[in-house]
Image (cartoon, rainbow, N blue to C red; front, top):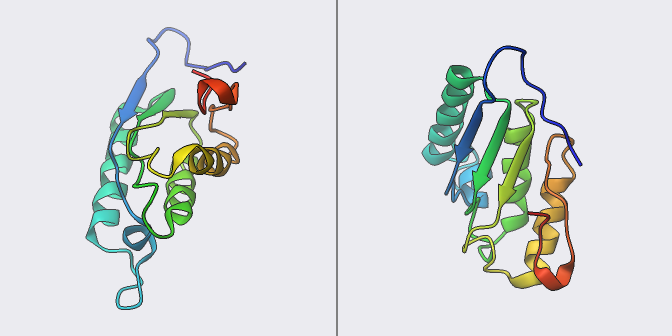
Length: 134
């Protein structure tokens, strides 16, 4: 169970993000470019602006954080989780079709990465029903 807190006298604000699709190379770069590249800068700028403009009480991510079967996908999930945690706002995600490309074992491993962050609300449920609590 979790509780979302909001300032008294105002409606609950939810910001939804979707389809970020950044690969590990776009987050951390590769041998020829260690900066991560323009897609990372665009994503970080966009999320920063949305967070500033909306001051959400909850951020939801409706899938496709990255391509789960791409090389170094674990690093992409690590970097995404670090970005979300930098805002110190509760966040929750659901899996997209590309997040499931690595099968049940990959989804479980990636869930562990995301769940390790204190503001992530995701929990694993009954594995026979999939990987998630909602």
